[in-house]
Amino acid sequence: MKIALTIFLILAFSMAVPQTRAQQAQPAAAATSTAATSPTQKTIEAYLRHLYAFGPNVALVVGAPKPTQVEGMLETNIDLTIDGNNQSVKFYVSKDGKFLFQGELSDMTKDPLAQNLAQIQMKDAPSLGDPSAAVTLVEYSDFECPVCRKLHDALREILPNYAGKVRVVFKDFPIEQLHPWARTAALAGRCAYQQDPKTFWKMYDFIYDNQEIISASNSWTKRITLVSPGWMPRRSRAAWPARKLAQPSTRAARMVNCST
Image (cartoon, rainbow, N blue to C red):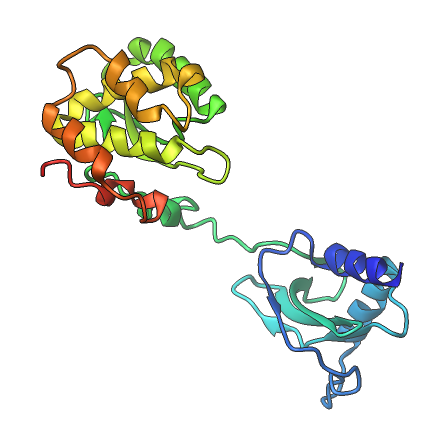
């Protein structure tokens, strides 16, 4: 019961905090700051102890509040130690000491999506639609995933209504822990794309349309026997099965050289 309560208190204290860092356990006496404690620090400690019902066995040290980029807003790091388990959490407090909150401080003068968008690499990825379309939809998909198949069906139905307005870029995201033949399918799609970009979309439709009859044991043979003869280059058929699947699944684009 004591261990469960300890875990609960730590989770409750750190939940919804974007950044925490594990530290080495320290005795409660060593965690006490030698600097003078301000009234604001004392208020924060008393408030958190009351809110989470921390007893005397819990060491809670409130760091000196420091200025932020926001006028009237300070930040403080709070170190919590329960039975040797330590967490350091960032809090924000108003300069008058009345308001305390956890969360992420966002600069609304900057694009909040810019950092994520910069990480999306669309070069050498299968794409469908006008490259200059106003909307680009990047699909991270797993060929064995039933939810991904529903997305495939939905896109096939609605995309014709937005010709020239929407571009779709496909990115492999096989979840091998759950889907044993997803990576095999991703490699097959990549081979098809390397031979002819248009061929990839035939493979894309074929796999999702036949997802229910494909398995880990027949994933390659089903695609060979069920697709229309001649659409997949012979060179790809011969080279692909012999390749070893030892590289990380997220790098399917580089795992197979289908031109050899």
